[in-house]
Length: 352
Ligand SMILES: [Zn+2]
Image 1 (cartoon, helix red, strand yellow):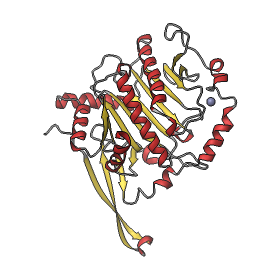
Image 2 (image 1 turned 180 degrees about the vertical axis):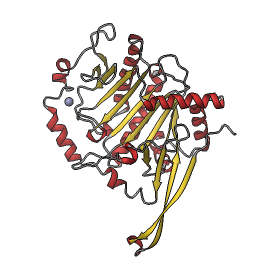
Image 3 (image 1 turned 90 degrees about the horizontal axis):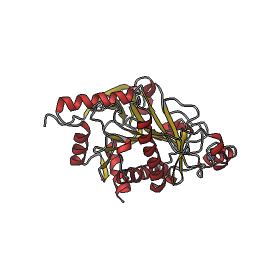
Image 4 (image 1 turned 30 degrees about the vertical axis):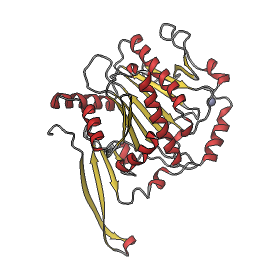
């Protein structure tokens, strides 16, 4: 068992004369968890759960719908404009210049931040609440994104990395209300992706086994943080989450996004749809997710396809950012709810 993943947690105490205790000396207990792969830290404190609303807020749906209505006219992703206002790829990459799958459409980002930077949107859906991302819609969008990813891998021989990501609503960094995903791939590997790959390779070399296989096996044997699995897709709450209400899916059988088959895309879509609906039920509206794959240059990393989804500050007037020095400069995170409690709640939702 020496090769088992160690889930390390430490506690420390903050003591002070507290007005909440009549200026008597009081102590607050803080728990710090360390991600076994990356070393990233996540912090929980007594009462943080009660403060979640102060940090993330509750969505003002009337305000969200007003934004949707205000931005509908002239929207570049809506049906009247999308075909004239968005770029096209060369026919050798995508015949016709834009890839279509069901209601989903893939085209180049007009302001790319990498050699491959595509947008995936539903032109007919100018506004979606998180619970509107049905499994059927996600199968189309993710399917289109992974299909495009496979074409891009062949078309751009120098690509080393490729992810499929989503910023939904303004607090999550979206510049448009119109929902969309992004396919993001280039030659220089983003540092966090590099960290995942390097640590996964180091783990495999040191332990003779895949970190991710071990993670799935360990989490599913203890059951504390495992949520649901189907068709080789394993959903779980990470021990040290890298964002609010983070849930991840691990697909040990797939090394690249382009290798995902229809059953895996369906299991990813089902889980993601239920998690997003849960965010909405909890008053949240903004989120990010990324589906990561392994290295495209043949480098052996032992990193499989992993999808991570996090909630962001709810959309409302005068919303505050959920990233402050802790996240932006120290690289730590907050745990509003224990991952074990989150997993217990999600188990019913994903399995049901
Ligand atoms: Zn639109």
